[in-house]
Image (cartoon, rainbow, N blue to C red):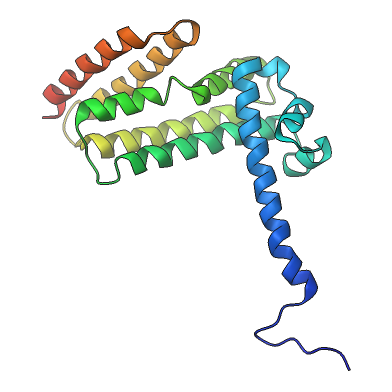
Length: 207
């Protein structure tokens, strides 16, 4: 007579599925994190699926199982880290609006680290790669909208007031520009002065 499965029992195949799925999620996360690091350090030309797989400690076949194409891997990687950074930013100010200098500095920090360097490499590649461009364009629009929403929330900005939306967007454009300046040289000292000035501008514009 065969064993009877009840509410409190699991078949061997079902019991094994949990650990297998967990390993799959870990592998995927390692690939995404390795892809961002490779892209930031080596650029698009030096960041192949094989290089990322080796860095993540998995086989190339495993990498291609999760991400069939190179374009899929790198756009997913930048999206993943952007979402992680957004979550960390929200957690940093989980109580809602915060002192504006702290918010401005945190938003600027989004554009001065590994994620921005990786995204920048992806943008440059997309300008020359027709297959990559639609994915990167959609990704940039989505990340931009989410970053804007976070900025509005943390700054306590009322976008129904004239000029407020443009002021917030100007802040994000400025932060992106500071990120570009920081790619070639350490722009820390000048960045601190600009952050202080933008905080004053926001106080005047947002009330």
